[in-house]
Image 1 (cartoon, rainbow, N blue to C red):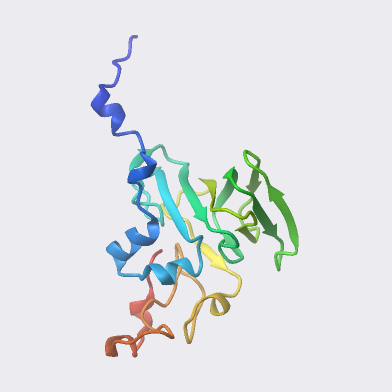
Image 2: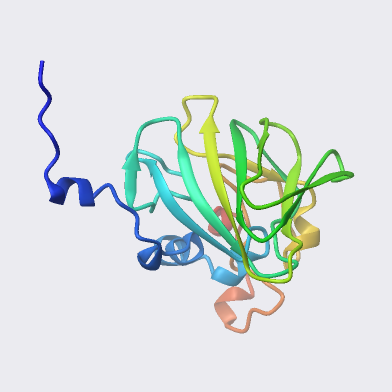
Length: 206
């Protein structure tokens, strides 16, 4: 049986142009009002969602390409020394491929194990394993991130080892899916409405 080919317009809808991608820091600010600076404290400086399932509800839900179930693709862009804090994905395998620069990958209870990815090197980190990555080159570097769910959840819950140490907040608690941060009571908050933090207001999905 011969299948009908996609039109050029339909195929273009399945293309992600890097110069048109938005970071999920910006997407989460627009969708949930979470300041980009708060998100950057626990993620790479810029993370560009590229592809996610149409019904996905996690951090990369705003990806321009709607792909099949079971694969979420993004690009992390970090200046020298930048990277997310030590964390673990509760339901997914996270795969990293170094596109440019050099990235140190750390894992273990306290990040005590380390290796370095050179361009086009790849590592697959199983779910439940603490991990972090950091640009150890002298230039802005990019890392391809491919997340594969091992459950039927439509989000990607993440647990950070010590949230209170990496966020400028006065209190924190266990993350909700995908991750919980207090976005209203920050140490640099200036507006009166940010001085009182109610727990239900802080349950933001990043």
